[in-house]
Length: 224
Image 1 (cartoon, rainbow, N blue to C red):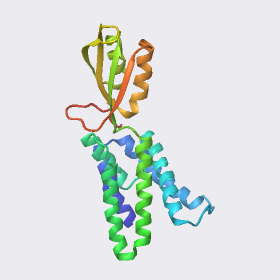
Image 2: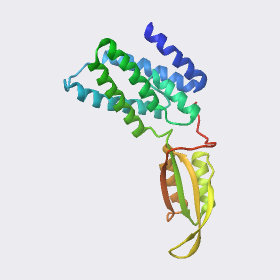
Image 3: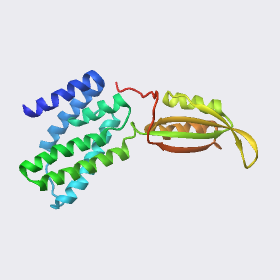
Image 4: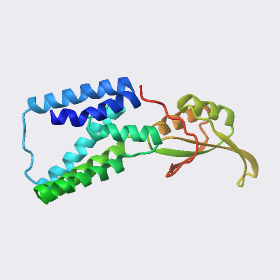
């Protein structure tokens, strides 16, 4: 009952603020995860707690990333992370990591530090794996030098729903006027955008830069 009550608020928050489909899929994921945990037999690979914390965290982060890509989550504070990320348009998984670490520190003071510190390592490994795979809340700036700026802009809009800005420049090597298309897109759309740009201009010069901070309107495809 306590576990259900602790997850009840995040589930309600997800249903109201993120999306019905996302919440239903997440509840199904939680149910399947709980069932398979009891059914799948345990095979010991190592008894080294540090290795278990690191590689277990990586496997957990990979599984969570696959759930997120499919439009679901594994429950708990992941609901809060997704809600905050959707609301503010930023990656909040590091903040959730800090929150979980603080809770584990309280556990350490009450029940002993060894398990608490290993659990923090597990959480850190899991969060890093999520950052590596799940790119929805990262943003990239594209600088595209092309002879077909209108077609490139149309492709960016088709893939992401974002517009672009044309910057008139001068090519120093050939001393000819050029057009540079500037746009910011989400990390998960970057690869597809580049592929689509190459279909209209295979000679386009594309510079992809990680965007650390962004102010202003940035449309994101909503979760259902």
